[in-house]
Length: 412
Image (tube, rainbow, N blue to C red; front, side, top):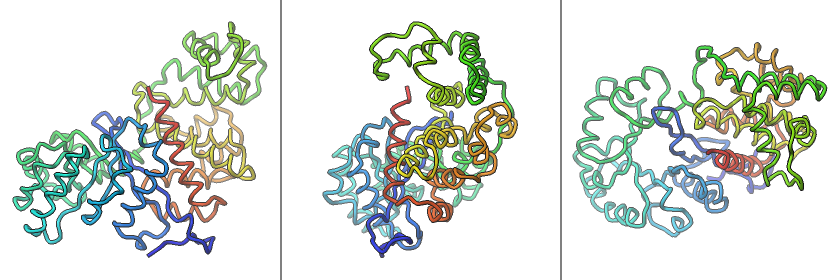
């Protein structure tokens, strides 16, 4: 059954592909799982999800093909054979195989040949935790990953299930559907090295932490820039942190800026970069933590870039620069461990930006809700935000994938 855009009689923009991160014990992203973003969760089958996810990867290959992270893609059994796999890079693709119907031994044995052929081509295979059952012995040697659905495993059965998975397969274990601290702690204690779930996308408020000197200076810099302080004051802030100044000079002197002459002073750098670009740069420094692979920091960059791209496509929605700041700073309270209201008082942002960050309202509130919904499989939230905005699903899909690629290209 097809899914129609509720604002259009044409079915050209029906699908948007999102991704959910898989992280390690340090919460650094190690892989992504692709899933189908539609407006009606019950209107599509797993088969259509698989076909459309592959279609998105094939037509927009660059964001995923150039990523250093693995990509997990679901496939129904009937979809394990076919020419669509020719469009996907085997070295970075993990195919998730569902359990056999009724766990039928004959079906399991017959599908083994197909699974072996995929592994020979270079694909890796992921299975649900049911693969540890004796009836799945033909598949156990083929498992590169075993995903344990934490929400469906009785706490008393977690340890024996993990032990069975380790004994019967050589697979890397992933605990999925992690939604509570207890689940995370329990699975970590059992030696699980990777995790996936809502807990990582929407972590609870963390304890306030001391800002690094660089973040403190960046905070002051954003505040002065937003207040349109004189050039002399901006230069003084930069001079207070040697590293901050050096970073700015490196960026302004890079080949990417297209300058014909090298910049030799901070004052000159500020004049050439301009307050708008300098604000953007300083705000990005605020999101940097000691762990540069921080999931939240990466998500913040993706949000900012996606909001910027969407506003560029529809100028009537707002200012691209302001939209970028809203997305980038949307998790600043969690990253810095301070209340959003307190941080906003220090930053002195425009009212439209502050309103979106603190209350989720104003000209950028709905757009922020949209990009946040794209991070998880919350179709209700996505649909509610989508209906209030003038973007097509194709525009959202392209902006999301381009922002993901942009964020990946910034990681060092």
